[in-house]
Length: 226
View 1: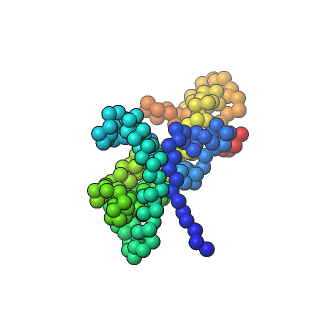
View 2: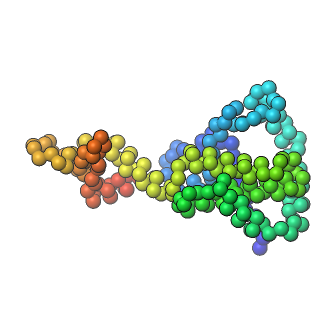
View 3: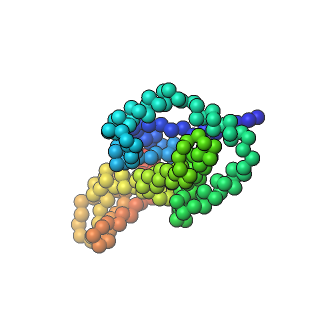
């Protein structure tokens, strides 16, 4: 059985996490890796250059008109060339993935997966240039894909999403309950009883270290599914 795996590009203004939250659901790390969020905030809105257009709006309108007139032509021309190209795509992709532009600085698996996907986009762009489909200078497609990868990293941070989500959940629990359910672990005087205690806090210079009870930690996990 022959199968195709396709990339999807959306210009939506909301992330997948925001959309799911509005529906009462919590986005999982795997979902955020299937739909990579890239912040389009460049010199001219979504654009780095206007290529002679009078304004960002004029450039966007020109792209819309060209897309309406020529959509599908580049794709068919690309696939026709690709079908008969004997090159070793896996080897070419490995070369691009090894470029410093896609380095992940030894970070965790999700960063490497995202880098590989952007590298694949860069490879497709370079092949399209090689086939005479784009008219771009050689190397521009890889640079653009690497730039998108860096934008993705800047908007998300490094490391696996699960670690970040755990930290966000703990922070949110503390912000909601604060001193109502935590008290100073080092205070030995008389204090007002803490109802439904979730733990204690201890001064650590200019910050606080929060110490959860086992029940408090379990409750924090349960709140994610309410």
